[in-house]
Length: 215
Image (cartoon, rainbow, N blue to C red; front, side):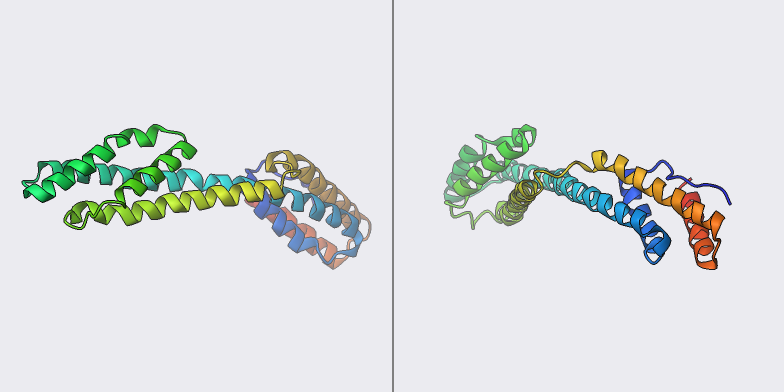
């Protein structure tokens, strides 16, 4: 049997790979110290992954909000073209007066600026009785929900980031985790060569299969 080492992996692959290694080696007393070291470094690595994931949801939520904003502003433009009765026409004029202060440029603002400006716009819109303009009102609730969802993710992220203020990023934790895994492989290989029990050989063969799966 050949000596194995951790293959080149992306962050998410390293997480899955490590989980598999720990599952294979958790009941081997001969390498319990090395397994414990991997577990320690893996815990730090996973905390870093969680912190990164909290931020990664923002672009998806922002795209949803941008689409809803775009649909809303286009619905306002459509109402300007419709031959409304005088009362409804006056309501459209009020609506346009509000939206002209925000417009399609909202999507070009930073995340936080867009959140605040969308909030401000919605507050002004909700002060109007837009019932006669069904083509417009249907956009407001989804837009409010999308903006609130973005705010919620932002709050959760900062809360989690504060809790993990002393946590290293996953990319920084990956190197010591990889070193610990390689130490585990080296020690297990040595025991296979010296004692060669069926259990050790089986475990090492499983690890070889796992390593080959990522090449």
